[in-house]
Length: 228
Image (cartoon, rainbow, N blue to C red; front, side, top):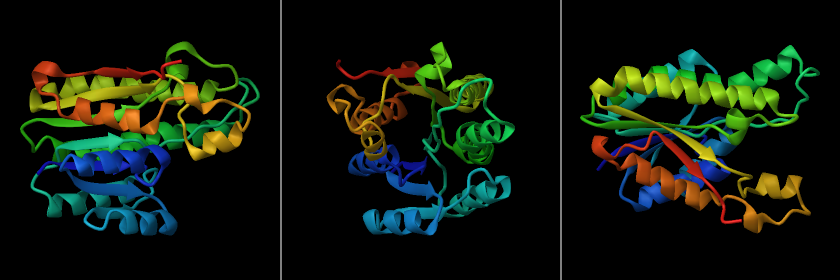
């Protein structure tokens, strides 16, 4: 069976994605941060390998994938879902705001990719996906740092894909093109109608589709819209 590693695995998108890949017959390596998240993942996915890892920590990330290397002949896919969002006006943002957005969205991907690619490229065909955002494409008022960090995700993944394509690695940038229907977003916007938001299950289904394409059917960018 193929093996997939997911970062941000305990989150609203990550947990649904883990279910979708498990149902499709994949072995799971689930990565998140904190005792509560680890306990939740171990309870929900008793057959999975679960790692409590701060992905902003280079050494900790390297250690996690080194442990995976010992347990797995080859890693077939990595879904780098971990990330975060915050609203900040562009010129009133602080260096601390900048550091936090870059850490949550880009550093987590950067550390994951550097640790995972040597294991991924042991497989004949492998796959690495990261999550960007519409703000990376078009900008967004009061979300300049978020958009910049997500643009870094997209550019880095595309560049990595060009470098590693001869080694059999395919990269995909996922763009949820709208608000994602998560408990946090429902709480933050109680008066909004979530029927027009992007469903996590749809994101997960699209990730599975992209991960299972051959090099002749590669999907380098994937935009997922709600119907309304």
